[in-house]
Length: 255
Image 1: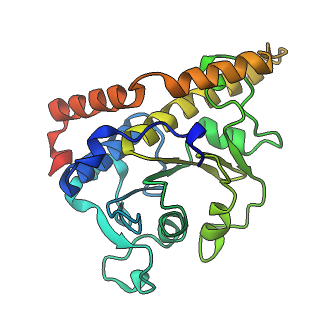
Image 2 (image 1 turned 90 degrees about the horizontal axis):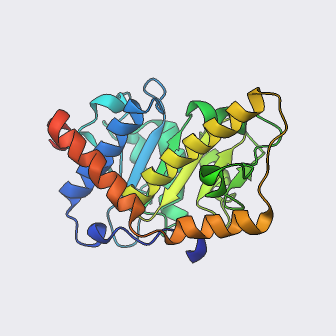
């Protein structure tokens, strides 16, 4: 991820305890379920807690996003070859994808992988480009990597292969699979995922009309994308409010 494609680090994360980071990631799971971006007990989120990024939190195997609490999250070491031998071993595909992220992309503090409806539809089209037709789609203009070499379930070396496709991007359309978002904080990554799904919903809905898209010119699309990147504290304000709602309605997520 290049500096131009990454929202500045959430200031709170630099001072946050592991317990607070656990609460942030648990909140992301709960809101992914509320927004219907989950899939049964599949899909995974992770968050680095060590300075070098190799030690990270990840959801336990077989737990629904809507029930995950801070204390449920597994603490894993990306460099531990015996991770899948643990009695509380993570889902093998979670280890393949997220272990590879935190092993090879230390700048990616948070990684969110889902098969959300509209992003997955777009990832299933021959052209998975998010064309610039509104402000949300313009946020991702020239800022999305596309993996068009699906090699089966994310097991074994498939996770490492996928990681090589990010290049300098922080969002990947995983062809025939779903989407993965990288971020320097939970707030930044979740905000990106939220707007990504909204952008994909708008584009897919526009395709469904059968009418010609009203594309914005490249200069305007790039200008708008840069405005998104420099908009002050957007992700932090968004995620702060999401946690505040959970504090009122589902405070057990912090347990």
